[in-house]
Length: 352
Image: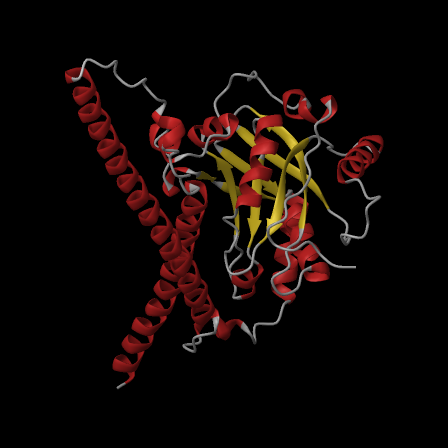
């Protein structure tokens, strides 16, 4: 059995019980309220996501699951989740939608929050800006307006800081996806850039008072021998790996730029050929008119000169968005390391 490969998205429940989930969980607000402005996650959900990756995630493979909860005004409360089971492409009889519906029905029977509010996915060194994630989140957000996708970075979390972010598609990108027109003209008309594709929603992790007391007790009993590792000046391979992935995406962007430049040259060349053809026809008609002959019939230039197919611009936007994500990760990593270096320098000067 194998986990899901990166690039595959989860199926979306499209039944009436799933699409009406967020509406049943609303507080005072109605269907026309503004988008979600805050995501509140129970600590149990975070632990379940981390445990899911530790048990099934490995290498570049990602793990995915369903988020359950409810919407209260402009706050999305995620109170539970369950993972997608492992299966291979040979499991043709497996129905993801049916599995989700059965899980939510079972949770409802035991009086646990069962309303569908989104999905989560792990990532490999921040590589999550893909077409599969875009299509999956559009399906969720189109069916359930308040749904979000949680991105969990296990590599950054292993370095000492929890990396869990919530994203939604922007309203502009939702309109373009509904039209299914990703041509350069449509993206330009909608003012879609890589910075306006996803919007990050602030996350708040909430625990009950009993859990907070338990964590305080565990912290008192925990060993402190490994805490000095956070101040280690040694640089891990995280920066090198991220730079390598960044270089790969820059190469892909360069290839897309070459394709776009080729398309522009072919378009310009075709326009010149069309202009020359029109001039020849005009001169020929003038000669026929001087001889008293009728002019040549007009022809459909769009059939004679078929415009070249423009390259897909959405892929370039996704690559640019992924490059921006890598740059942000590098910025955060280097800022932490520089802070430790400056602190070490000050301590050395103080001791000397």
